[in-house]
Length: 229
Image 1: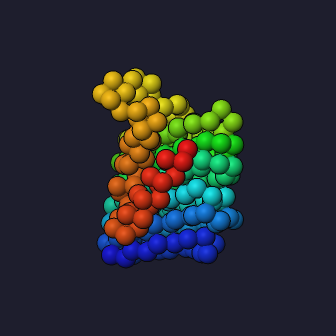
Image 2: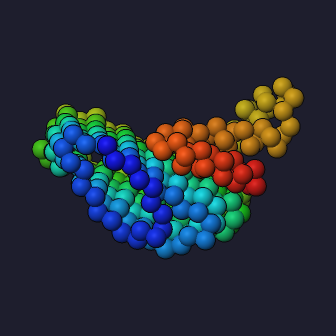
């Protein structure tokens, strides 16, 4: 098993995950980071990929992730958050190619935008003609905090095989007023109720980051950012 943390100084990389191996990787973009980052992962038989993408406030970036599942038994999990409280411009593109049978992929991305931020998520899953018994799932959920912010999302499925399980979904919404009312009725101030909602919204992604130190740092910075929205 290998694990690593990338940042914007690695502008492009290609990684092959050997048969039976596991790759854990975190890609973190922080304040002042700008530019484009591309990662191409090629999966072998019974290999595993666990990739976390984290975009923190103050980053303007374009993130491109491509995964080719080229042998049976490969499993991919890609998750990410993007926190954009100001005037950030963030674009995330993923492409997961199920090129053979009996592979599994899951994607979960969550974003919060305020100020005049612009975010975009463009995800594509391609299931080849012979990729029977594929399981592929993709979710992108967004919270819009400001009327001046804009969030675009475009999940896609291209399926050329039968006997597969695939789904995709996307949402863009506001903070849940019923949840806020419930917390306020229990004595929680309105502002703190909103913060708790946003923390709960991103916690599934942060909690999945494999490296403990990275997970702790991201959790701390994410809470600071959310309290500034």
